Length: 287
Image (cartoon, rainbow, N blue to C red):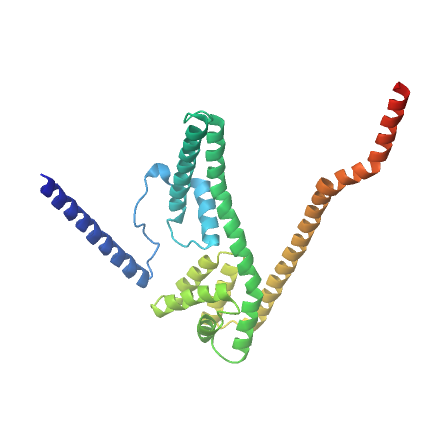
């Protein structure tokens, strides 16, 4: 019986490995054909999938954070639930070791699991804001490079390929996204669809309008240089506005820090001697 059990276990492991190998080969083929993310590798249970406005918000933030898979929202829900349950179990274990019971501190368990559940979504918001800020900061340099290349006489397609190949240091994030655009074009994808996919990957304000401008330049002969100058001016103004907003935020934080740390010390310095004098007077009167 023991030998039969070992044989069945080895056969099951071999079948699982063969299935995993076939699945990985299928994923590589889908990626080469440009279909990665169009269908899920696994289907999550319906109770674990995001729905409605929550799904739209999560999917938009994940796209902006750089997670391009179509089922990224569902996988995020899965990961958030797993992290929440794991945090609850960890707090219960700590409660068992410290206080002698798994449910000795129920309030701590509720607080820890709630913070984990809410914090997962806030982490996505932070990642999306950081990536959007980096993408927007590179846009003026990208448009200036494109203007120089287009004014030198090269075509828009050559401009894309040059940016993807030679400008990874100047605009690293955009160069990677444009390299994906060039890869889509090399696989035979139409320019309209490839530019739409590029705008979806960029996922910041102005990307769709810029993709529409590229389509008009390719198929309707619209002159790109004046429009690109306007886009560059707009993105520069947005960057200046964000810098001014950040300076205003620093001023507010400095005021709060001064109130928290400097004002108590100032009150002690200014109010200490009169208070000491009053207590000395009262002590002398009582004696």
